[in-house]
Length: 161
Ligand code: ATP
Ligand code: MG
Image (cartoon, rainbow, N blue to C red; front, side, top):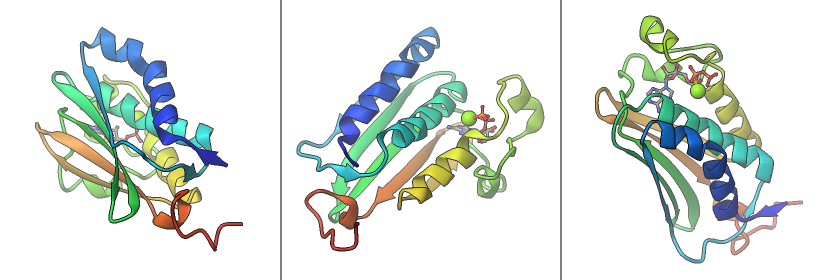
């Protein structure tokens, strides 16, 4: 289906806004005007964004979270960035694995099962997208999702059935 990712974004934020408020963390949204529709599943995308926000809030003690939606080189770019505890370089390669949790002792007090990001990656890739992460301990984490031009309503869609 053709979806308006801006709307999906708003729904995910609404669903998590209470938790953000409880931790006094602001969620900023920066959406470029005239974003085309995306050929993807709205509920799955809502789950993706919700899981990323869930982490961003859980692993951030102060500061803010930003969600950005942009078109870059005709492709769609969705960014979720936080100012949280970050992830060390040697643990970063494993965070998308099922049940993997960074620094078990510290993570345990945050709760969670280690499935959130495995689900995120699966859902993004099932829908033709890619996901990447960069992070710096004590500074924050940035997740970057790409959907290519042939999945956009203004793009080259010959290969979509
Ligand atoms: P859940 O299944 O409830 O989501 P979880 O949050 O522990 O549990 P994932 O979402 O898969 O599991 O994340 C895996 C691990 O990656 C987390 O345990 C945490 O250590 C680390 N992590 C994920 N997102 C962030 C983030 N935004 N900042 C810092 N660490 C993160
Ligand atoms: Mg999680």
